[in-house]
Image (cartoon, rainbow, N blue to C red):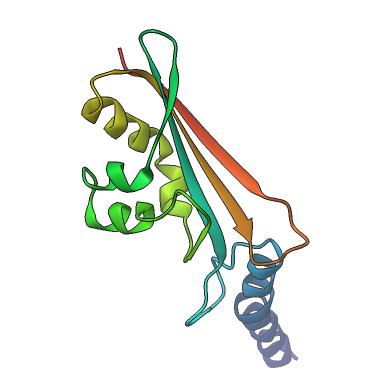
Length: 138
């Protein structure tokens, strides 16, 4: 009897870890917990806008900012001014404020910077996910 309950609890744990968690991350569009070899979890783009001292706004190409970033970040930014496929962009999403700081330090004319990450999930019925960061440069 005890042995049967142990077997059952292990089977439930295996089902949760191997089926439910990966499936739930696929359903939410991130695919962060599922295996997706040779595919991508989402499409994304990065929009960077700087405000200058005279109040004017200008777009900054993510590829230009990539030159001042680590190799991994540079790879994620290259060509990201339009939607592109990629793996999980959770790390990029979590560091948008740091990306804005890089723009502030490399663009002397910027008074403030806004960085926006738009993610289009692989499940087309889900909405666009937008995350943003604002940084005052002075």
